[in-house]
Image (cartoon, rainbow, N blue to C red; front, side):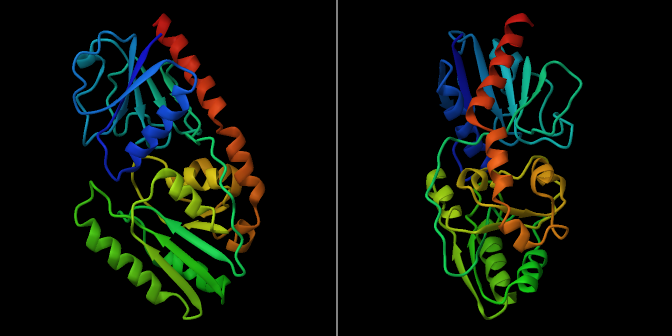
Length: 297
């Protein structure tokens, strides 16, 4: 079977970047062409299409409009609800949420798309604590600052917060957020702030320079935190809140404050286990099941 992967249009957007990861993983084993567009035109030469669905960008791309077997890829899901931000208009639906356990045969839970890259980890003389991601609603400063100030007198905090393409006033909000966080940390704690948008490999290498990545936010939004994917690839432990956006992590490493930052920093085994469970091979094996379903539906 020959397929077409239709990604959403390029932008500084986690859905677009995650779509690239999925295509990179699938294209190693399956015969799949790639495009990134709002309107792919005639696709009848293909046996099936995969649509990386983004409600803001390509909501019109469904099995009805494409008129071939169509697989939806939806990164914007709520707990055990695959249709919270996407239509029920695909022949099969792939949900990159390992905790998804939906009752329908056409809904497939998937591992996270962790690419097969192993960066060199860099050890510093003092603890290096990182945070990266877009500054959006539900990411308050206080939980991060309070946790670091409580457990560390000397450390380096590295912030990587690029400006988001599809978030209004992202430049102003992001700069203010980082400067405020810096001002609230202890004077003895060093702070580095980066706003440049990194490539996937650059970002993973950056995360690999940190001893711990901290995500203590609460957001009532669809989807899992894509930032965790880069941490797993980099082999860097994570400290997360008990927010449902980190539900895929909780079974492996627990949540703050039950797990202090120091304990999370030393829990390298949890990252290794997530990488094993969400490997490229297991992602490919799951997609093979989707194609088998597609041939018989």
